[in-house]
Length: 328
Image (cartoon, rainbow, N blue to C red; front, top):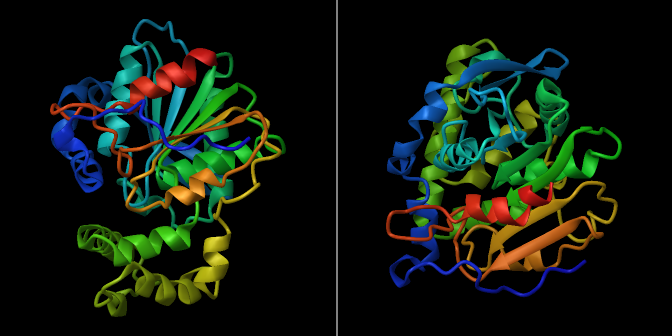
């Protein structure tokens, strides 16, 4: 299977066609104003990730007890269960009759205290185990995974592992603007529009400071606080606090390019934008797999943007609903 060239199912108004506007405006918290019910009725759950790892999640079940299935949402790097796209997507599908589980990756959201070890993106085993345990909460109902950006990368790796480590009620996996080549994504954030570098460097440093405060006997990131780029922090932190001596070895653990998807055993839908300022469109167009893989590349949408009107409503939930869930 090869993706088709970019097309125009998504058609934003003229004033919202800039990819940076799409990317930046999509994260505004004002967009979550109508999703208070999702948070108000959520139950905090600690999920077993194996080997003593605990991940924090929030479960919002249908009050009637009659559910169409469960949708697990995975956020992007330095996001969390309360990220705007998590709340708006979760709220949409909760109103459609689905139970929603918003899972935090290690050291994301308010979860830095739960595990002494530091997050890195190679930690697929603990995330997959946690997702399996969440799916077992409603093992007789259809289960779906939707991931955004780095969360999309995790979702795609879970799909790849499903044959060997099955989630028995898994019906469909959806990845929105997933990271495919982390080296390219890191370079794009460092060398592209300065707002992205500033935003992610600041958020990463804040996360590291929190980790150091909680575990001062293990971590000292003081010398990293002067770093100006993501790559500089990556190069310094890996040899000290990970099994990977170089960025090349580390990035390879979660690079998803080429023909990796020929052995897929579960439907996987990838949504991307040709104008994504972080993920090169060529990476999406070169993905190859079997009949389970579907890649849809829109001409516009930015990175996890896809805002369809001036009320900043997202096109993504409707796309997921029509393109994948009704098939499950």
